[in-house]
Length: 538
Image (cartoon, rainbow, N blue to C red; front, side, top):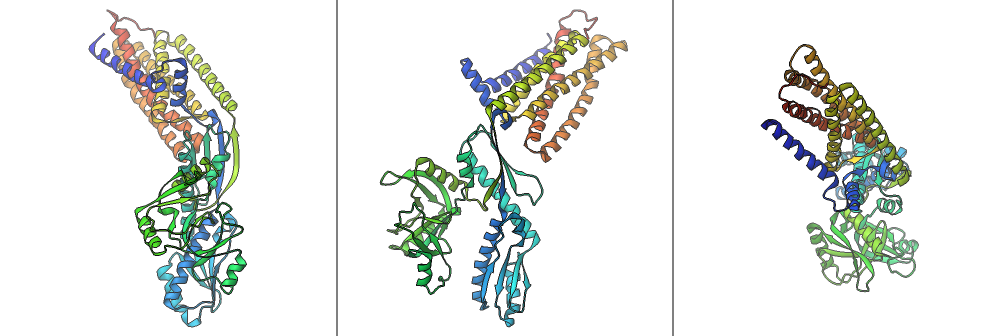
């Protein structure tokens, strides 16, 4: 064996040892071997079983929230500019189809204030278009570009919040992605491998977790009592919020709170489950530096007053401020540790900018996954056996070279997937089978080139050298075009199509190593053992 062949053999041995280690690790028993393989070769939903969900983001909620924020800001701007008006409200689109119709109505503006109103909207609210309805009434509509941007942002933020919540549960290889690529699409696809009871996951995903901490202006036994106490009209910049059944209040209680909260969920730095002084479960939270400074100023100025902790539109607790509070707070009323942990999880992940509706739900049982794996492996083994048989019969001794390259190709493919955490799906198994065909094709190109050179009268060593050199460019060409096709599949395909593309690309990369480098080394090793090379079994 020459020095060059020995060096290449060491490289091949090292690569294959790393590949085997990536797949099975260093097991001490058969049970540990099976466990390592199961952990390293991650299976997708169609193989492992789990839950498949399609969620529809209720983008109209995000648009209504934007309109409400604009109304609050606009009321303050109109007051500062001395522009009177009789009433201001918005419409209430209830479906996604009606979302584009969102608008704000301004009624009773004096005729002599028309110019000032137009200038105010143009300068401070450029996202809205002011349209006169009558001489004193106006309508504000979102600009089309702003409307599209807000809907797209709502879907993206919802997708990110759901991804953060699912990641916090520690699930293996979940898939959360937008379904479809049109800007109008508002559906999110969620695949949860290994989850066959999605009730808790669905509950966590659907929690809005809108946290507000607001100043309490008064408490009342009913909405009617609150309105009666203020002459039928609530004070400016206030709202009524009902107490939750877990708030500890006796009977039905309504809180009059400031509409502008002191702290919101965006001011949270962390949240975790804990226990109170009575050993009951609660959710403790920590504020950011800016939130802590704002909270400290407010609590110091309002010692002795009540503070409402509002979660998803209900007051969960309304403690009395005893002293200055900086960066710590707590939400009481959790029924169990899991409930406290789930609330902490969604608070850390962030609130949903819009509600979600479940459009589709499917559960793939583990038996279906096992059947898919068994059938896929059977198909792969049958295909491999047929290919091996044909190669050995047609190419004789050189066919052994091709068979070894095929086996090493499969090991490398699985190892690369294990190292990079790629998920093997049923279409991925199809990619593995196609890789076998591509690997055989590369060997055939090389072998036929060598045959042509031998028929042309060249010696065995020269024929092998020329055959590999001339076939190499053709192999590169075919592999590059296939990789480009896979890139388009990955960019524009859905999850299963992406799995097929990823597996095929990994197989092609491994094939360049096995079909060219490994195969050439085996030829050189075999020919180097012979004193006089006169024939080649091909």
